[in-house]
Image (cartoon, rainbow, N blue to C red; front, side, top):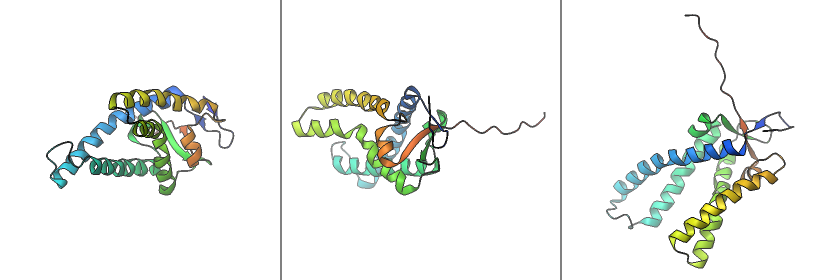
Length: 173
């Protein structure tokens, strides 16, 4: 764990951040299911391959709403579970504008392999292998940041810190 000199906030370990990232992905299955059902019902799509690009754009917007909403409040559901909070450089809650910037920049987890796959016309299996290779590389690059933050956080002016839950005084039984 790294202690940041600006506000004495502790940067969560890379292992903890990646566990949170994986849990976030698991929770996103529910978001995708509900949003996909909503899109299909509203657009009367009967075949999964119909309106595919429109559905991808719709999911991009839905994901953006989900993350921007929760990050502006400090934590997503997965971040609460792992006691991680997103803050600005000074340790304050981030604005919706900064959360939106962080959302767009967070696509650096996926865009490089997707762009390479598209540029070279790679089949889906090879694109998946490329993405599975890029994700750990992007995560490990955080080791080269002075505060061990992910680079998209540094670009967005945000950082992840440990946020232990506040303890409320116990009431006598």
